[in-house]
Image (tube, rainbow, N blue to C red; front, side):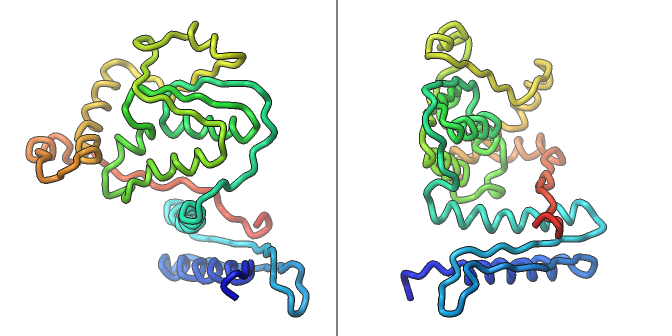
Length: 247
């Protein structure tokens, strides 16, 4: 029994979660598992695969997004706790791609490239990868070193290398990147004027200080709280709806 991998047991936990998500967003929420197919669906055979549909409904799109995010959070936490790659990497192509910036966009790009069989090398000016998730988010939003644990999971697929402390224009040039091998890809998370960039950096400086501090008691908070009051707003999680017809 301890060695069993029962897919139906895992699906039953998700069904219970879907029900709790609906109850947490009552009275207008609807959360339903409408169809379930168990394979091989034979007596005295441990189910190896279960297909089921999840339908979330709510008149408020913001609430619906939170319901979707709660289900995705459960699945993501389970995968990261279990460890190991979620997908199988394609055969190596021999191509090497350089990515500037180890933020969410650069990491996502590297993962998709590695999944397709390419090698990805990420250059980032900071001492730690993660970008906004590591330096820009409030500490209470991504607890238990979530950003770095997520990066460790990304590495599990293989073919991804991250070089920190490397800034474009200071430590290397585009011509030097082209010498890596065949492919070069530049990834930018957004464009902004110098003034907007300076303001954005000021807003994130306090969050960076808190997240990287070894002793929070030594972090000055008085003046910084006054400057940031009313500016930090939690973003609504973005998620894909689960339609009953698509599963």
